[in-house]
Length: 632
Image 1 (cartoon, rainbow, N blue to C red):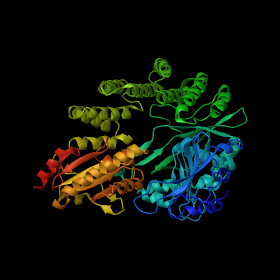
Image 2: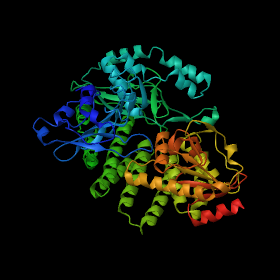
Image 3: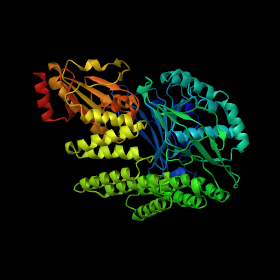
Image 4: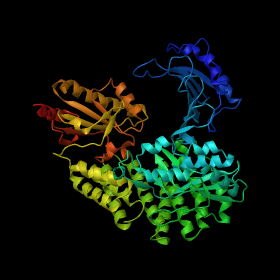
């Protein structure tokens, strides 16, 4: 059923009322099929009789009409579809599709003409988000696309030799210019994309990729990161020099491998630089020397078919089953490979077992299996990348188990155990691909102790920055060192933008006592969002008390989407002050990286001259006393 037909059924929604003369029937609403190929729940003809249709009013935003809509539920009360009108036009501009009661896909009519022009894959379908500007059902621009989903899009283009589907995966001229990369690097990217469609077609023919072929796995090494301050760019330049795709041909006999070559990250989208090539190409592999190419022995090909056919998890409670089944099959593949060719399979075995543990922390048997595999890899593959890889993932899984079982009294003991284990790992595996991550977590662990742990945290961050200067964590580690030593020093931020898009200079911080607050509307549950709103209201009270005396607040949002910050500010009734944002989130936003922010919210209190008076300010009576002193 086209959206236009449904419009007639919901026109009476306009005006913000959920009172219906007559609700549409479930079969009419469920006749609306997803435009994209996704997994969603659709009841059988017999099950339709138990489905229910309900009218709904949704929470009213800070401005505008309250959205209204229709919800379709199955016989068990699980949501199947939601048709939502947020504009008051009387026709739905949002259609949500569900899989076993969890949202799995969304179609968005952003321009209000009755046709979807954006699609979001969610839940069991992944996390990509694309725009269909000409509304023909094909993606013209990606807003969110992981490296794995990029490889799936390339594979889908190869299956149908679809040039357009491949071309939208390349960086646009505007995107290249926005990076502020050196001209030589931009020209290199331009040259690489030339002839990519021809390479894709030739690779698909050579590898016999058909509509029956199945994508299985993407194998990547460590990313290569160039810090933005080394070339004056807006963001760090992140790329993968080794991206290899494993697929199964669908004939029950063969499997294949092709390389994507280099891929680069632009914001929340991974982009293709070159066309795919048969085989493992010139993959450089991980820093530990393991090959990023995947060799598939003939004996493993039937097992690959089983791996591709493993039923995806239908709900969080089903995740342990999914990972356990994958682990069993991956073990069999690892058993028929040897030497360097076995390394990537061993890593995948460990990943599957670790994911199983983290999906069900109370399953002691799963933890035992993971420990056994890790010990055997350490014994039989000492000095390889797989050994350190297995040790670190086993350690983090054990931490998950301990924290899940900890009560208020034992949390500190678990944290002490965690710091000791991280310290041991760093000493034992000083150059492993996960050692920088272990150092970052150890630094955070020391900060958890409070002031008593800051000296150890600072030393750990300094060691990380020196030992792994090109790692993505290095810049944040340097920022954390600056934060821990910021008392009495000028508070400095990189050039930034306000939430409304206007530019902001750190020079504007001087002249008034200022509270700088890092925060984020990162929760997706009502309780978490309500907590964020309450924190904003507490800040608004400070402005109400001291704003007319010269005090001000500057907030720094680390949300991926600025709209999330605006939503929370509006829900709190507003907050007078300066509100800053740069893309990248808590880990990559230059504003957060500048001071290595680890916890949210985090606040600095600045004197009139812009120097730091308190680098760990907490809203409460003591802060009010400090503000009053600064205002005298």
